[in-house]
Length: 93
Image (cartoon, rainbow, N blue to C red; front, side, top):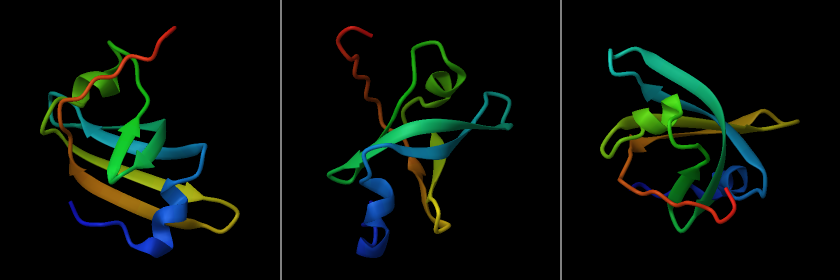
């Protein structure tokens, strides 16, 4: 994975970071949804729940795009890549 430039890390390392996540539906059409995400040690994690459209679209190797912006200065970072199989269940969820 390409490293995120230092000048954009603040967009990813905020406590409450929101972004638009683009995935691909089984028929090839795009699906975009707002998500909570966090970034640590070069890994982006997005919040979803089992059975949701984005969870179904995030199968291992799926192409994704994540666009996060921070206001009031409109600065954004685009992250393009593919997913890997990883599921974590939070206690009490």
